[in-house]
Length: 68
Image (cartoon, rainbow, N blue to C red; front, side, top):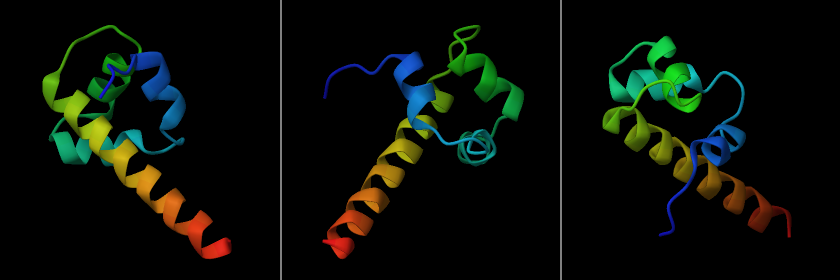
């Protein structure tokens, strides 16, 4: 899989999902925000964010399939 930039990640995460990512990574919402804005590096936050993006992408695909 191609490397995803933080800017692209940030654009794919709906508003309010920083809390979900923070819970998955076991960190604060501030830590997630700092990561997405490029102020800090965190492997845990990156993996949690990618997991949330993958889940949302799958859900979107299922909804589209059901509509069509």
